[in-house]
Image (cartoon, rainbow, N blue to C red; front, side):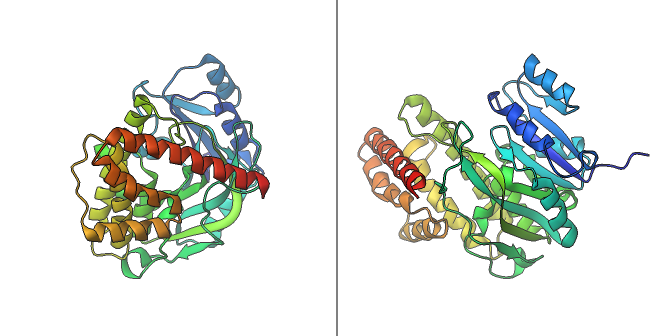
Length: 342
């Protein structure tokens, strides 16, 4: 009988084709033995060229309907066989030693349930920035098994879920939390995945090893140009993310994680008040305090302009939105200038 793979690598492509073969190639080009891991591509489009490449390299691929998200957590569990599951988005890359490192940290710590490695930020051509445009997690964070329910956790704990291409998890705890991922608002959520890991009774580790290349480009996650379409997309993301955080607030009730979730939820509601027609939220004085705390623990200092924009939106939401995009474009420009000059 063939031994099941130790690691399952889940690659996700949602509409985007441009970088997918590069992402898969980086997974196949590992120092970890090929027979000890499997690669599964979840996508929501047909492309004969990409499918020929995947078939030639013996990579399984599963295609969903064009309007559907290609990956759901239950489908991941059903289709994969490895005890360790690593995720990678279609536009990112693994370094060659990624899977060997992941195998080692999970082997050395049987209590480990969630591992987040650091990453290098690259541009559309694959060129790395000398300095990341993003605030980093730091030298490392280790949250012991069970501490998510019992003891205060680091204030930046909820940031450990950023960039799913840096995330690896142990399958055994995930099955317990599958029902939450089947709720409409949480079909797929990196934040919810981290939250469940912190509540799972397993330990959580964020390490400084740079094992992933995170591609920074104009897409759903990097929007700085004002248009009605862009406003609509941001509103959709804000609505979905708010619903996920409300669910996380319920899950973390009476745990040390609850105040951290509440702070992030307050921050997101300020953001959402600029864009979403669903917004029916009026902030209270304590919400402003929570917003400031949330911004500080995320090191997202540029977000503090949301408070005056929130006030401006009560006079003219259109002008508040335009001001938001001008500021967002300026902050991105400054961030890239600093990255290039460091």
